[in-house]
Structures are given as structure tokens and as C-alpha cells.
Image 1: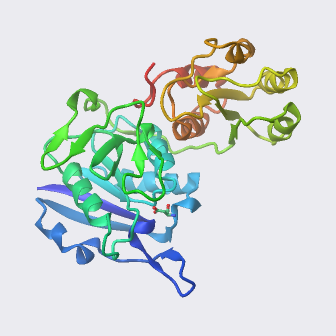
Image 2: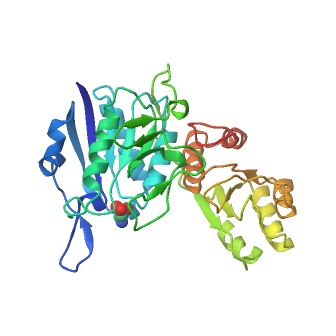
Length: 335
Ligand code: ASP
């Protein structure tokens, strides 16, 4: 029988209402006691709960380091991992882990729910049960994934796009890895192959990465304050459409100055689907000329966490980081 480790970190799935009526995480102990159906699955379940259960809005890079350490310690003893996590930052955490766990050969599946486990119409039970089934399934999915509402997505391609519907996640630039209905349909052509090399854990993270979402009216002066943050290494610039931005001189000059100072700027789109193509429009040509790096079809969550991990791995080698940003590390880019 396969052995699966359930790692409980917090999130709505295990929350209840406190005296003020707000949802707060609580320690619901062994999940199997709450969901007896789990005893009928064809696998052995082990549990690990974080000491401080959090709403995922409180996720930090240190949290990812702790999570990766738990996986590393338990890697040889388990065939798969299911991580119970809040949905708000699940796409960030799944992306971060996909870059921190190189040569992953076992499934690491994030799941959570829109309604707490105790709610009558909860989505928690079915998300949890199927995540475990997939982690213990015959088809090994050697990836960091998100399972939500009958679909398994590659984690670093996913985003939370609705806070109220049960299908909270989408992955517009990469097909679902698995579709779950009466049968479980594996989209095998899109699932990563099991690597022959051993797992390498990249636990160093540099959190000095920023994010600017451009908006009509953004000025060079506004950005200048942002770029003056001491220690800033790189910025993800969320642009319009296929990578377009204002052509205003001040705006471009401020970006150029930041690049000359050694700050990397990665262009990703505010659109959830499609890709950045610098030079397609006149409004992205200048960005290309001054050395803004195209994020192609990266999600914002992937771009940000990939930079944090790469700056942790190669703190002195900016050229290497530039090169790696353009290629796929764990299936996050269609290059
Ligand atoms: N605020 C919650 C969290 O991300 C929402 C959820 O779990 O769905 O922890």
C-alpha cells in the first residue's frame, strides 16, 4: 500500500467561526477522524500539522522553507504528499515549491476548500479525498500540483480566479493534468516524466523581489520610489495584454535606470491567458530595447517565486538568472 503524508498548514478547510464571527484556523487534529471515508482509501495515511496554523494570507518565504523541510525529511518514507493550504496564496506556494524541489519524482498535491470541512455544503471532503486518491494513484504525477473542484493543475501554471465559486483555480496556458468525473482521466501527454536524477532541495530564498502592476496614470516618479528600495534585486512588471506599457519617456527612463543599476525586470501580462511578445506592438518595443526580460507565458506567481529561488541559488550570477528566467525549470513556461 502506498504511504501518503497529509501536511496541514491551515486555510478555510480547517477553519471555524470565532466569537466575532470571523473565520480562524483551528487544529482539527487527525483529518481521518473528521472524514471517516479516508479509512476506506487504498493507502496508508500519515499526518503532520504545522504548529502555527495560518490563514494563507500570512504565508512568507520562511513558511515555504519550513514546508520544503517537512517534505525533505519525509521524502524517502512516503510515496506522495497532500498539502492542506488556504486558497488565497496557494498558487504562490505551489509555484515556489515547484522551483525548490528539483527532480521531484513523487506527487506533491496542494488542496483546500472554499467552505470549511464542517459546513454542510462543503467542497473540502471531495477535494481532500480525491487529492489523496491521486497522490496514491497508479499513475505517478511527479509534480507540484493544485487539485481543486475535479481538476488537477500544474501548480506553477495555476491562479486563483474566484473567491466564491467552487472552481477557484484555473490554468489558462496549460491544460489540466487530470480531469475527475465518474472516471479519472489522466492527460498523460502533459504530465512530466519521472526524472532519473535524485531530488535536490533548493532551500535558499532571496525575498527582495517586487511586483508592479501598471495602471493608466502610472508615472516614472511613482516607480522611482519603488526602485529605491534598498536590496531590491528584481521586479515583476505586470503589463497590459501581450506585454504592453506606456511609451511615456519618464516611465521608460525610470525602468532603464533601474536596469542599469542591476535590477532585473521581468515582463508578465495582467491577462491570465496568452503570452508576452515584446515588440509585437510599438508599446512594448521600448521595453525590449532597454533590456526588460520577457516573462513569456509565466504567471505572476511563478515569475515572482522563480526569481526568489534563483536569487537564493545564484546570489552573484545575474547572467545565469537572466538565462534561466527565459527557459523552463519545472514546466512553468512554454518557451
Ligand atoms: N483566507 C483563506 C486562506 O487562504 C481562504 C481559503 O482558505 O480559501 O487561508
